[in-house]
Image (cartoon, rainbow, N blue to C red):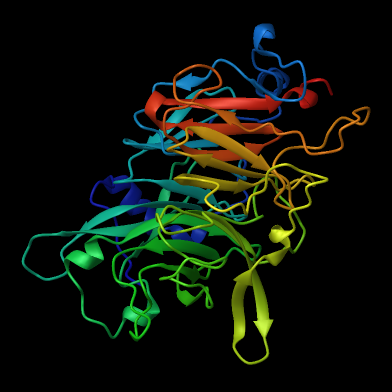
Length: 415
């Protein structure tokens, strides 16, 4: 692991790093003050609902206004601090629940953001670093680790995980030059014990090399040390446990705060053309011979046509899925956005597409509520690139339309 600071940090931020041991993650002094504001809660819960867009059956309803003013937003995330994080060309925008922006943190090449339960914020981006000593900095993938991102005291950069140096298997390997610059960190996901997964993709994927293939998922502890990787996944061939062109990763660890231990399973999306199943559920298991390894979730192959018409594990179900998110509530919904199909898809915890039919319905199959299409209308998208879910609200980073869209199920509005 290399400890490095981005060049753009203000000197005051650097000075605050000296006092890092005094940082408290229990502070509730957030940017917009108390979060227990009745009016704010009402706006977040309902927003403005156009009665002309209300479906006659179960379906999603746009919660307006959509939030605009972004430049190619690629990710949206609601943190454990209840703030909303939007990643675009300028870095990380921090908004309150009304959509009012309170802070912008400049992160070079930012693409993905999450937060763990200790309120550490992780951002996938890029960093300029002179590795070869020729005074020409290489453009390398990095994960920035921040504390106090949304507090009045301001963000503190704790660490920077830089490829290839943050990979323990690369410590004995020479810097590869251009192939290392072509590597990308495409996602980061927290674990119940505040470790993190980092998904990586790149051009070099030899199975005989001592160093890990570029297509891999690295595991880091809370101190930023690479402790291993997701053993058992295939970086070369398409399967139900492949890692081909990973575009996103998520776990079931998501706000609101949960005291359950949880597990270390995760979900990924793949964009490689030869990936037959582009959204995968990966399970951790302790093999007597191989130790901790990761396997496919065969339960998602149960296509019960009496209960659903569409399924997550249908061959070539997606074209270019750009993000996946697992709701942490009892519903366990899975959301996937596809940047080529300009669509948002929803599946239940078994991989069945849709939501439960109404109790009085004669049809007991899942009701498909996925939607989309190219355009800038209330139900349309232009390269949707990020999705998250919080308090029964679905947020979509609609990249090509420079906006954050919000949706609720019509049945949730009636409660």
